[in-house]
Length: 168
Length: 114
Image 1 (cartoon, rainbow over the protein chains, first blue to last red):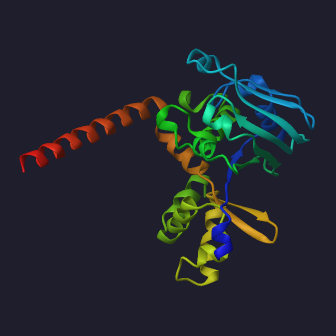
Image 2 (cartoon, chains in turn brown, red; image 1 turned 180 degrees about the vertical axis):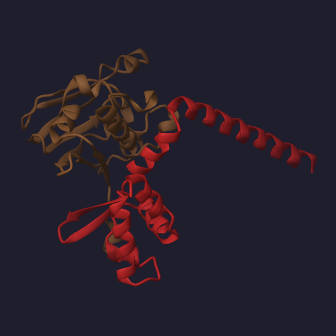
Image 3 (cartoon, chains in turn blue, green; image 1 turned 120 degrees about the vertical axis):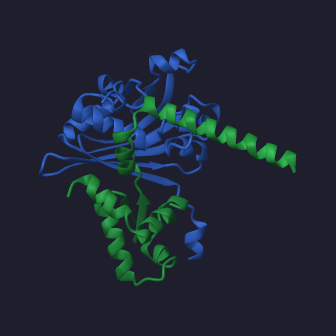
């Protein structure tokens, strides 16, 4: 028990079921014309090969608020479309979070028999307590968005209904 | 049963809420750690964890030989989003802020009048 207490788990796991093919979910995560429609609303730029560049661009709304053009950067580690995407992920928009460095993010998509896909997001946040608070949604009242549960709930809404939650 | 039914059913039990509270305080625990907080047989705790997993509120991951349990807040978020829109949420939080401010003031006044 003592060792279990000593090892602080800094991983966050989120799961959502979406009535769509694994391919649709994959595209919603990796294609900018999809990523600008949910969550923080920025366009994603992926070079989908190991070592490829990832950039999460700021949405027009964020830019108007003074955010830099690129909000998140990282590197693609593993690509297995439409099942698995592993990448590094660093929030560069906030200097405190940028200083925490790169974290590791894994998307896993499993398509079921009934046309429902299971999306699991595993975010390894070792050494990044500020970012961990943000992606857990703790800073939502400060206008930093609701983190992964908000993003994934919105992603589900956009794929299944074509509309964001706020518009639903 | 719909997904929502499973979530409400899972949340209706105090032991299962306690398990979620434990994971909220510290995520990624093993069955052994979770059952050490409860006066219940291992089978009982496993049954509760299975119901939480079926409802999507707990997600398990393997880490070496251990099975770690993580709290997944997305189903609760989906229920939340169903009845509150962002626009309304802002109004509700404005009202909550006002309530806190007024209560803080009246409390200060009470203190001063003493």
